[in-house]
Structures are given as C-alpha cells and as structure tokens.
Image (cartoon, rainbow, N blue to C red):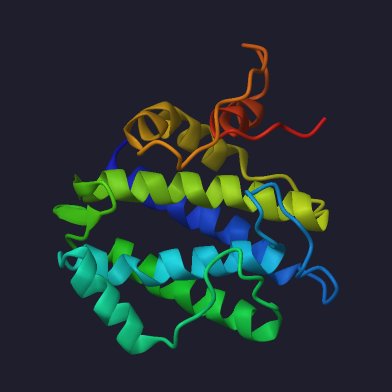
Length: 202
C-alpha cells in the first residue's frame, strides 16, 4: 500500500479508536473486552503505550534506546492485565499519545527507513501497517465492550484487511489467537476479526 494511503488509514483508524475512548462511561472502565483478559482500561493503556513508542522507534534507535526515551518521558504505568482503573487521566494520556504518534508518522521521511520492533528490523511502512491493524481491531474490541453504537470506518477496515494476512503470517506465534472460521462471503470486518482470532458479533 502506498505510504500516503497508509497514513490516511492510520489517521482514520486512530480517530475511530479515539471516538470510542471518549465514549467510555464512568462505570465501564473495568468491563471485560474481547482482547484476551484485558479490561476496557487495560486495552486503552495498551494503545497508549504502543503509540508512545512510535516517535522514538521512527527516529531509528533500537528497542532499548526507545524504551529509555519512553521511560524518561512518562511514569511507569500498569501492564495490560493489571487492571488500570481508567478515568479522565487515561483519556488524556491516550489523546497525547495519539497526537504524538500521528505527528511522528507524518513527519518528512518517517516511512523511508527501518524500525527496530519485536521481530527485528522492519521497513517503517510494515510497522505502520501493523499499527493500523491494531487500531482497527482494538477499536472493535473497545466498541464491543462498551456498546458503542457507531460502525467502524469501512475504508479503514478494507485497507487494513488487504494487509492483514501478511501481517499475521510474519507475526511471532502467540501474538494472535488461532483464526476463527467464517464464510468466504462474510463481510470484510468479520473476515478481519476472524483472522485476528476473534469471533465476529452476530
């Protein structure tokens, strides 16, 4: 996918996730989500952490150096699964992290190099495609958990699905649950969710 299209998908998917973060009610932070054993707050904290790493990684440093940058800028937070209590501070943390990651990916030359991620060095566009998949799937997780009424943006879902098989195939074992079977003519979102190990809503 061309770099400009990847960026457009990223911004669209990020807005969809943000819409759902801002829709979380005060009594919904501890609700379970379809994402492993994470609560709503855990899921959002996972995305906060992921997006805080984008700027340092895109600067070309290795994982250790990127981790040092993130640790120096932000206090340590809970690991997903530790049941972050959530609330307005977590919403603000997401908004800041989202703004910073969007600026990092849109910076001149950001997608021209490589990044050091968990599976080693990878082209920056591959990293962005993986972030896009994470945003769309976790936006569905969050929306499902809180009963968000709006659909995911169809253009982002379609764009992410085009890259999803390659992403799952190159991802280390255990990062995704086993794929779920759905009909070949199922909606694109259902096929994307099934590929990520989720059972689409009926």
